[in-house]
Image 1 (tube, protein in one colour):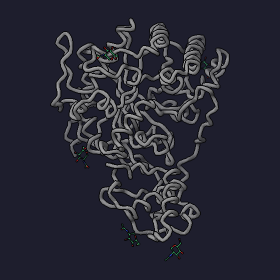
Image 2 (cartoon, rainbow, N blue to C red):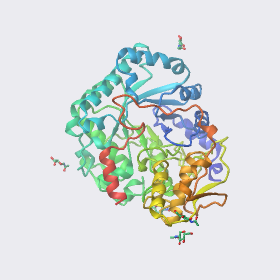
Image 3 (cartoon, rainbow, N blue to C red):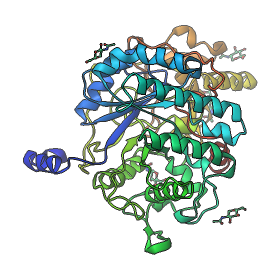
Image 4 (cartoon, rainbow, N blue to C red):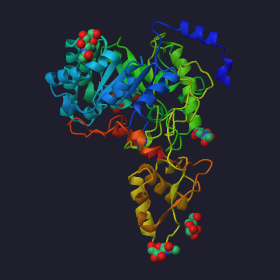
Length: 486
Ligand SMILES: *[C@@H]1O[C@H](CO)[C@@H](O)[C@H](O)[C@H]1NC(C)=O
Ligand SMILES: *[C@@H]1O[C@H](CO)[C@@H](O)[C@H](O)[C@H]1NC(C)=O
Ligand SMILES: *[C@@H]1O[C@H](CO)[C@@H](O)[C@H](O)[C@H]1NC(C)=O
Ligand SMILES: *[C@@H]1O[C@H](CO)[C@@H](O)[C@H](O)[C@H]1NC(C)=O
Ligand SMILES: *[C@@H]1O[C@H](CO)[C@@H](O)[C@H](O)[C@H]1NC(C)=O
C-alpha cells in the first residue's frame, strides 16, 4: 500500500514543519439522509483520518456531546431562527449549549441557511431577520465570554456575485444585496470573524464558461490572465480571488476568507463519478496545505472544508445528494488524503456499521397496466432517491424494467426493508438475487439501529426557507437543470 511507503519520520517532519498559521482542511457532515452514521462513528472516522475540524449543519446536543473531548474544532449551525428572535433568546440558547462549549472546541456558528439568497429573491424581511439573529447571537456569546473563541458567520455563494465576469478583478457583489453585505462585513470585521464562501465548482465552471480541465489544480489547459500579471489555472483560485476582489470593492480588503464547503458529486449527473472526485481533491488538498495562497493573497492559508463525509439522499435537490466520501455502509468511494499530504490512500472505513440482510425489492416485469407501472415508479422515486437514474448517472443505462426495479428497491431500502414497503400494487417481488450491475449499485442499507439520537427538525421559523445544508441557490439550480438534464 502506498501509504506505508511514506516513512513515519518523514511524515512527522512534514507535520511538524507545518505549524502555526497553516491552512486547515476540515470535513462537513450533514444528516439529510435515510441512512446515517451515528455521531460517535463520525468522530471516530474524523480522528482516524487526521481531520482537525468539522462543520455540521445542526447544533443538536447529541452531536455536541459526541464531539466533546475529541479536540476536533467544530462549526455548528442554527437553521431554525425562531429560537434566536431576540437577544434574550440568544442568551438562553448560549446558556443551554455552554456545558458543551466547555468540553468541545466550537469555533463558528452558522446562522440561517445561505440567507443572502433571500436578499436576491427580494425577501428583505427574511434577510433582516437573519442578520438580527446573527448580531444578537454574537452579542450573547461575547457577553457570556465565549466571543473570543466562537464566531457567528453566514454562508456566501457565487449567486451573490455578478455572473458575467471573465476574470477575478471584474468580480463584484450584486447591487441588490450590497447594503446588507456591507453591514454584515462591518459586523464580521468587528468580531474578527471570517467571510465564509461555499464553492460548488461544477456550477461555477458552467456560470463562467470554463473548460472542464480548469476544475483540477495543476491540470488545466486553460489559463486566465488578470491585472498585475496575475495568472489563474484553476477554478478554486479564480473564485477565491473573485471574492477577494468583490470584498475590496465593498471596502473589506483584509477580511479573512475561508472556504466552508467545496467538493464534487460522485453521481446523479453526467459530470460526476468517483474518479472525477478523486482527481479533484488530489489536486486541491495538497495545494491547500501548501499555503501557497492565490495571486491576490500569496502565502495566505486558505482554510477549506471538504464537502462531505457522507451522501445525503434526502436533500431536496438531486445535485446535492452524492457528495459523500463514504457510501452509507461506511466504505470510502474513492481515494483522498484528508491531511493534504497527497498520499495515494483510501480513508479509513467506518467501524461497527451493520447492514440489512441481502435482499432487494424489484419490479416483476408485468407491464399490462403501463400507467400503473409509471405511477408506482414515480411514487417510489418521489419518496426515495432516484438521482442515479438521471442522464449520466451511474444507473442511467440499465433499461426501463431495471429502472423501475431500482426505484422500487430504493424505496424499500429507505423504509428499512419493511415488507409492506414492497407492494407497489402487486408489481414487485422481494429477491435475494443481487440486481446490481458493475456500474450501477442497488444498495442495501444499514440497520435501523444506526438511526438513534436523531429526530428530524421541524421547520417553523419564518427565516427557515430550505432544508438545512441546501446551499444551491434557485438561480444555480435552474442553470444546472438547463445544462445537465435537458
Ligand atoms: C464552564 O467552565 C467554566 C470554567 O472552566 C465554569 O466556570 C463554568 O461553570 C462551566 N459552565 C458550565 C455550564 O458547565
Ligand atoms: C456585466 O454586465 C453589466 C450590466 O449588463 C455591465 O454593466 C458590466 O460592465 C458587465 N461586466 C463585465 C465584466 O462584462
Ligand atoms: C468519470 O467521468 C469522466 C468525465 O466525465 C469520464 O471521462 C470518466 O470516464 C468517468 N469514469 C468512470 C469510471 O466512469
Ligand atoms: C421487461 O420485462 C418484461 C417481462 O419480463 C419483458 O417482456 C420485456 O421485454 C422487458 N422489457 C425490456 C425493455 O427489457
Ligand atoms: C399483470 O397485471 C395485470 C393487471 O395489472 C393482471 O391482471 C395480471 O394478472 C398480471 N399478470 C401476471 C402474470 O401477474
